[in-house]
Length: 355
Image (cartoon, rainbow, N blue to C red; front, side, top):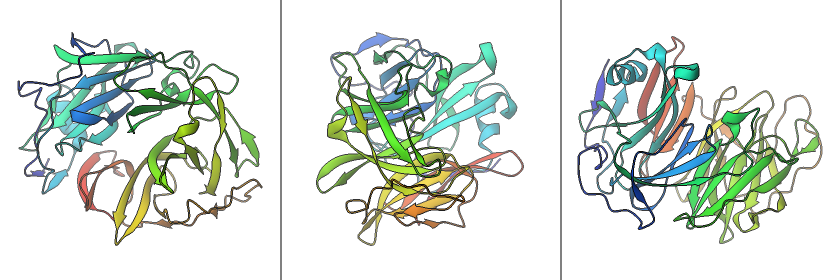
């Protein structure tokens, strides 16, 4: 394994530094049963999505200062994670990768083992490029339970998380008739979480749908208003006003693109380059897409079938040099960190220039 990294700092909590946290938080060990999605909020607070318990945990990492790595290249992340946990690459799964914008620290959501023996863990990369466990004992934390979470598709009760304008947004599935939901929960957590049901037009399927979950989303301002840009399997791109996410209601998202069928979106970020904003989206079958946001405000809603696996709506380009990307996040204004699944079944985590 080859590690190349400089100026990357691990979580202050793991280093034993003092942690500031909202007064609502308590000290203890959060009862996290699974971890599939991560997101960062203010002051180094890490949101951990636990679909098994249908709960989102807010953990005060204390990781509030630092700079992103000047170089970052973990040639075999599976081996590195396995070694840190006293096991092998075959016994671990990396579920999500997020960069703490306050410090540049890279965090990993990991599952060790399988089935009933599966153990959820958080890990970081330290200043020497070593993978270390972020201990979830005696930490400041809070939590919020999600009502009526999906039972048969439990791991899809939480598919994506994001923090925008003082609210944690949770995407996933419920047991309601309109199963696809988005929850906008004020943070610090105070009130009960009630979902908003979401309906969209799915061009590849030629119909309106309410049961497919948002796979990944990013917040984005359009005309000064906050929106969620959400991507679904097979592959509608939809905009939803944040102001429409009201508890116990239903909202119809506006489909502005069909990006191709037989494809599952995996992760999204927003960045600026040359004075233009772009969405960068990783997919399991259609590569990494670069989507200019200039047409988001004026795009005509799609409401007719898109046949033959074709694309329609806002334009995009596929970044040929980014192959096998399964997770990505913005590292700084010029680079992204990407997790790549290689043909030999190994994982590579590295920094790449934003295209």
